[in-house]
Length: 489
Image 1 (cartoon, helix red, strand yellow):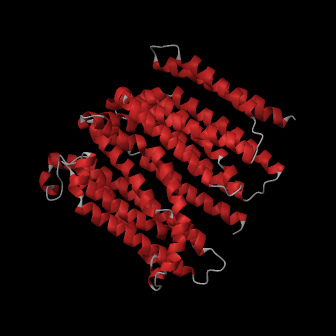
Image 2 (image 1 turned 120 degrees about the vertical axis):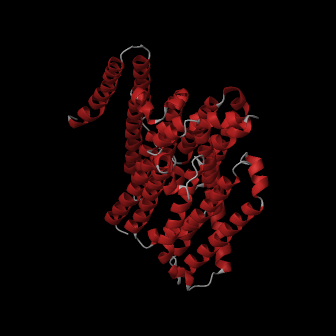
C-alpha cells in the first residue's frame, strides 16, 4: 500500500471513529436531562463498562490474528483465514449468549439487576453480535473498503441517536397528548431500558448490513489446524486487551460493589459517569493524534533523524494537550451545561480525569519504543501494573471517598504507566525527549491554571474574560518560544 493510500484510509477510518465518538458523546446532554434520577445514568454507565470489557474478551485478539494471517505471503487461500476466524467468533459469541440466558437470574443477582434482567439480556445480545461483527469489519479494512466501513459505522451511530431521541424525547410528548397512537409499543416508565432497546435495533441493523461481506467466507470450510495457530498468536493480545480495557472501565464496573445501598451507588456512579464525559474532549484529541501518529512511526526507520521527529512529536503533543486542558478548565462554567444540573456535584473530577487522560496520551507516545523493537509484551506489563494500581485504589479508597477515588485511580494508573514506559524505554530504545520544554510548559500551564481559577467573581462574564487572558498568555508564550523563534532561526 502506498503512503498516499495509507494516509487516505487513515483519514477515513479516523474520521468515522472520531465523528462517531463525538456524536455518541452528544447524547449525554439528553441523557442527563431526561434521567433526572442520576441512578438511571449510573445503570447506563455500569452496563456499558461491562460491555466494553466483555467485547475485548469475546473477540480474544482475533481481529489482529485475522490481519496477521490473511496477509501472510505463504497463505494461498485468504478466504480460508476469513472463514476460520468468522466461524470461531460465531461459535463463541453464540455460546456466550446462550450461557447468559441460562444463568440470567444468578448473573443479575450478582451484579444487582434483579428488577430488570432484560437489561442484562439485551446487553448480552448486543455484545455477542458486536463481537462477531468485528471480523466482517476487519474484512472491509483488508479489502480496502474504507468508505463502506465508515458508512456502516456512521449509519449505526445515526440510527442509534435517532432511536434514542424518538424513544426518550418524542414518545413521551406524543403519549402525553395522544397515548392511543403509541401505547401498543411504548411503556411510559421504562426509561433507561429504551437506551438498551435502541442499541439492540442498531446492532441488528449493522449485522444485516454486513451480511453481504460475509458471503466470501461461506464457501470455505473452517480449518481447525489453522485456528489453533491463530489462537496461539492471538492469546497474548487478549491478555493485553483485557488489561488495557479494564484500566478504562474498572471504576464503572467495580463502583456498585463498594456500597450495600445499590441505589446510592448507581446515583453516585451516574454523576461520575456524566462528568467523566466532559473529559472526553482530551480523549478525542488523543484518538485523532493516534490515527495520524501510528502510520507515521511505522513508515520510518530507527535512525537518529527519526528519533528527532519522535521527540518533536512528543513536545507538540504536550503543548496542545495542555492547551486543551486549560481550555476545558477555564470554560468549565460553560461546559458544565453539557450535563444536567443534577450532575453538577461531580464537576470536581474533571481536572483529575483530564490530567489522567493527558498522562495516557504521553504514555501512548512513549509506547512506540516497544512497538518498534517488537517487544510488545512490555505493553502488557505496563497495563497489568496499571490494573493493580487502579483496583487497589478503588477498593481501598472507594468506600470512603466515593467517585473521587475512581478519578484518582484513573490519574494514578495512567501516571504509573507513563513513568514505567519512559524509564524502561530509555534503556531499551533511548530517545532524548525534550524534558526541559515539557517541564517548562507543564509548569506554565499549572501556574496559569492556579492564577486563573483562584479569584472568585460574581459576574460570569468577568470570570470568563479574566480566564481567557490566561489562555491567551499560554498561546503567546508558546508562539514566541516555538513558532516565532523557529521562523527566525
